[in-house]
Length: 346
Image (cartoon, rainbow, N blue to C red; front, side):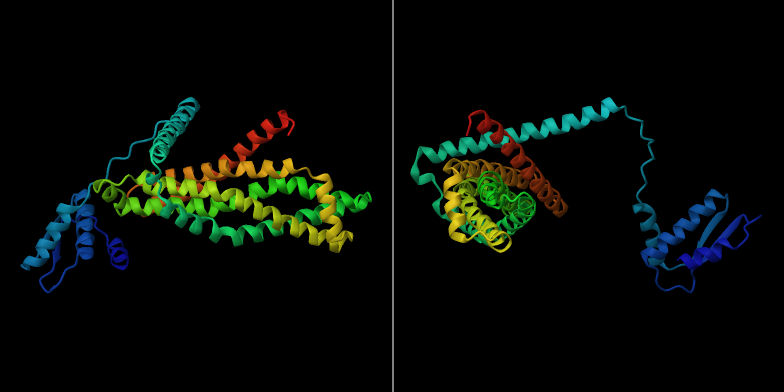
C-alpha cells in the first residue's frame, strides 16, 4: 500500500474535479485494500474531488461499505491542562491513601479469619499449611543457604583486610557473630523469601482470580481466606525462624573459612571465641524478627494477588509491586526493631 500511496502522491491533481476507481476486473478485495481505498476517498473529498466506484461486484461493494461503517472515529484530542504541583501531589497522596485503606481492610479480613481458626481446631487447614511449608520454605532452603554462605564469605573477606592493618585479626569473630545473627541473616532470608515466595503468592492468587477460581470457591461456599490466604501466612511465619537459623549457620561457615585461610584463625578457636564474645541475645534477636518479616511478606504477596485485574499484564505489574513493597516493609520493620532493641538495651 505504501508503494501505491507514493505513486498517487506523485500525480498532480490540479484542476481535477472527479476520480473514478475502476474495479471492473477485480475479483477479490480484502479489508486492507478497502481501508486504503476509503482513506484515498477521504483525502480526495477534503480536496473537493468527487470519487466514484466502478464495479458491479457485490462482495467488493459490501466490503467497502463494511469498512466504512465499522471505522472507529478517533476521539478528539484534548489538550491536557497543566496541573499544579499541589494537584499532582494531592492525587498521588489520594492514590496511596486509598491503597493503604484497602490493605487495612485486607488485614482486617485476615484477622477475622484467624479468629475463625481459633474457634475450633477442626477449622485449621493442616494439609494446606504443610503443603505451603514445603513449597515456599523447604524448597527455598538451598538458595538461602548459598546466599548466606556467600554473604558471610564476602563480609569476612572485607573485614579481614581492614583488621589486618591494625593487627586486630581476632575481632573478626565479634564482627561476624553480631552482624550475621542480628541483621544479615534475617534480612538476607527475608529478601530471598520476598523475591521467591512472596512473588509466587501474587502470581498464584492472581492467576486464580483471572481464571475465576476464586469466584467458583465462593460460589461453592469455600472462604478463600481460610483455604488460600491463611495457610500461606501461617506456613511462612512458622518456617521463617528456621530459615534464619540455617542462614546463621551458613553465614558463619563462610566467615569461618575466610578467617582460617586469610587470618590463620582455626575453626576450634573461632567457635570458642564466638561462644565467649557473642551473647545469646544477638541470636534470639534475629530469630524474633522472623515471624514479623514473614507476616509482612506473605500478607503483601497475597494482597497484591487479590488486586490483580482481568488481564495477564496485571499479574506482572502486581508481582513486581509485591516484591518491592515486601522488601521495603521488611527494611522499615527492621529499623523499628533496631530502635526498640537499642532503647531496651538488648
